[in-house]
Image (cartoon, rainbow, N blue to C red):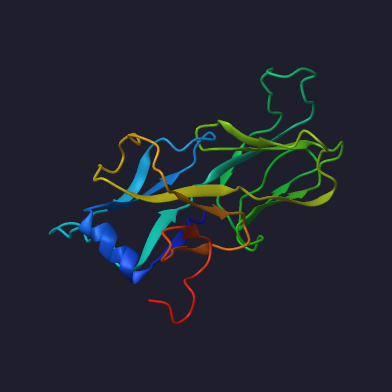
Amino acid sequence: MSQNAETIKVEIDIDQFAAQKKNNYSLFLAKKVNGKYTVIWQSKGAKASATKPSYGPRDTFSVDTPNFEVNYTNQLPSGDGIQITASGVPVTMGLDETVALSDSGLFGAPKGGGKTGSITVNNELGGNPHEILSDTDGNPIFVNKVSGMDIGDAVLTPVDQYQIWFDNKQKTGTMISHNASKVGEVTFDGSSSVETISYTAEGEWVNAPLPKGSA
């Protein structure tokens, strides 16, 4: 199984960089989980220590992408709020991998060669089974409730979102203490594993590199 990483490149205007350092602000990153940003995933302090570097005007965050469980159901419940019962035996796999679902309803062994940033199910099972994507604890992330899988390839693309901001020092792994006034958001939708976000001279987060020739 593959283990990939999502990379966030951060570019900070030089004057803003100096101001954030003067304020003794740290740089934080959080990942959206269950629709919310609640826990600090990574942080870089205003001043370097013997065990942890500080952030620079050109910096990088790298987050390992998890593996997932893939399964299917032959019948969706008729009402909302009813638990979906899986019909198959789940298989654990990572992004960029592909797995075959046989005409008898059994998954094969995952292998490489799938679409970048996605999970591909090569479906041979008739009856348009509905694919289920879960985390490795079995909690459903996505269920295809609209239409089942046709014979052939079905592509599942998990979407990851991250929040980045400057604030007072706080430990990684702790709950976000308050809502920051200015935050940036980076989305990985399977099209790329590297995204760039910038903090401009105007003190705004922009999902693009700083203009060429800027400070």
